[in-house]
Image 1: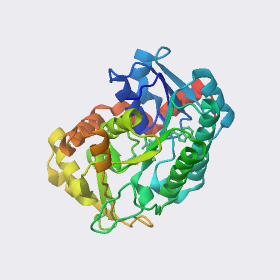
Image 2: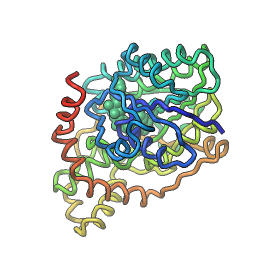
Image 3: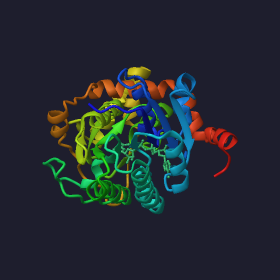
Image 4: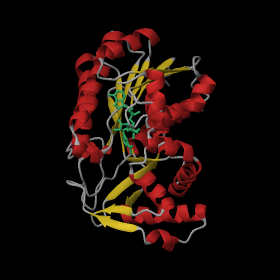
Length: 356
Ligand SMILES: NC(=O)c1ccc[n+]([C@@H]2O[C@H](COP(=O)([O-])OP(=O)(O)OC[C@H]3O[C@@H](n4cnc5c(N)ncnc54)[C@H](O)[C@@H]3O)[C@@H](O)[C@H]2O)c1
């Protein structure tokens, strides 16, 4: 089993990265340091890590504001902290935004990943006791029909600017392994949900709109299918691969939990209704079908048997448990939501880190 002294987490102020940092600090088998490298785009919010900063700041937790495309800044962070692992979450992550403005996706996801890899290769100079773990998505595999699953051998067939840019980053990661011998692992995961997710993604949008009595927008006929995984289970899988996975290998991560969007929405309504004491009918009348997203992939489903069989990973949360925790979190953390939506935390960033 591999262990690490200093882990450089890119995108640690985002949804999955912030949850990953919480997860690692809760693990007794990790006693090292975490460096959070994040440029703080609209999706990055240090409020998600307030408690970590208070408990571990300056001792085991350090934040560095930098753009992963800025080679000099990334090199300086490597020189200052000498990480022996990188977990690369930083990315532009929202498909709808990639349709409106693909350029940022190519810059950050492709060029940013290239910069991280190249700086790591130069800093580590052939060391074998180090690891670059790349976090990717099942969307690189394209769309499925009614049957079948994505495996690690499924050919890449990305169809949105987001997934194409992620596919590019995956290829670069594997090329750095094959060409330069950089020790890498790579995971492709299905849709995540849980605390600290920016309220533009399906589950937080729907929870907040229900509470506020706003329309619940459903794309097309609502019958697109996604596999859903609670974010802590994604992170436990990432940690399993980092500590036990074979360098040069890729692993699929999934929840074996497929839902049509409209059925998922109904589950979510039931959970919100349990928490708020309202009638389901109050929420059902808010459902509004809207024009489908261009190129909307019909179905994603993951075969994660390699991860389970070879590395012994399993999920800890059922879908009901994960949804209930997520709904409770969004109902309780109103300040986090207000600050994210109003941009109040951006003023704080400006005050502490200046304009960018
Ligand atoms: N959300 C999902 O369901 C899901 C599923 C599978 C894989 N992934 C992958 O997991 C990773 C994290 O996703 P997320 O949902 O937490 O994303 P997110 O959008 O919530 O967070 C991304 C973070 O990266 C930072 N960032 C963006 N551009 C940067 C740059 N140029 N330099 C430094 N930091 C930058 C942002 O400030 C933010 O903190 C992504 O690589 C994504 O492709 C996400």
